[in-house]
Length: 217
Image 1 (cartoon, helix red, strand yellow):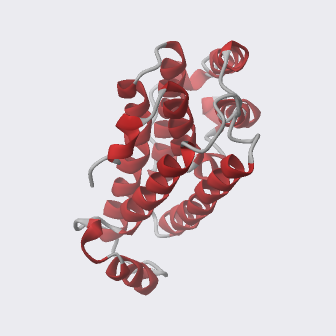
Image 2 (cartoon, helix red, strand yellow; image 1 turned 90 degrees about the vertical axis):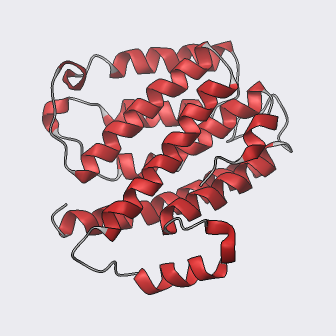
């Protein structure tokens, strides 16, 4: 599924917020599962990075984000080789997304924002692939098929989670234009509604990742 064309029309502050929302969709899947103890990752530092990404744009929040990510990088995870299971793979990819968000703060631009936004869509598509390749039927398979059927031709053959991610992404990009430039996502009713929209999608991801883990992925 193509990246939402509306991203190219957003100014830098909106690109930052679009990237933050893309990360927020995967906040619950990262925090809902304990990371491998050998990785030495402090979950409170991870939580702070997500919240700082949603803060009002500016030098202060950018600096705080950089400091928090520097602290995260002291974890043994960054100096070791890992053999992740499916859930851990998603966790590692989102840690990479948090790094890419820091790059966006250092060098604001469409390419940097697109890298973070595309990470979300790529992971959603990968999750669909894991479901399709499983020997077990997803417990909400019928509901997912009904959702896709209701989209008619807009899904372009994509799976449920890729289609849901695209729908949430499109809603976010469309609504971002109504946010005041000085506000963070937590500072306005529109921003909070978008975060809630992403959180709801994240809870769906958590439920499916739990199901995958019980089936031995």
